[in-house]
Image (tube, rainbow, N blue to C red; front, side, top):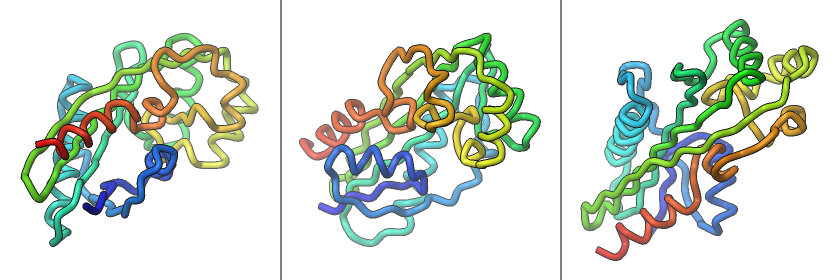
Length: 190
């Protein structure tokens, strides 16, 4: 059966390729800002479910739909993609003082059987102090504006300042492999 990744994220696509899956991408194109919860698990799950429904409405053949959403929690604050340069700079500076916890929700739906499974994965990343010139380069490159919390841990500029990761790199990238594989197996077994 066809696998559809409901995402335009290049990092999630990389994780899927690393897992060995052949898949098609459909961008869900939903208004994520219209979905609000104060709990990061509720927020990411609600958005991932909305993405799944949006993709479902755009296909007409049986498929396995995989959607995901991620936020970063730092010092009790939920962080999505930075909205401007100031916010990106503030986010990056704060990671020297507080770890960044990623909360990632994954939803997998088998459209042939209607079976849907979902789960949440949490990972934590600790940074060494990030120099101002590195922050400036990251902002100038612009990729951080596409990432929850305003960082891409595997970015060659930022990678030297990653002190420690609790959890997996793929979870921090926005698509935890073990959880995703377990959910795919679950919707295919029923």
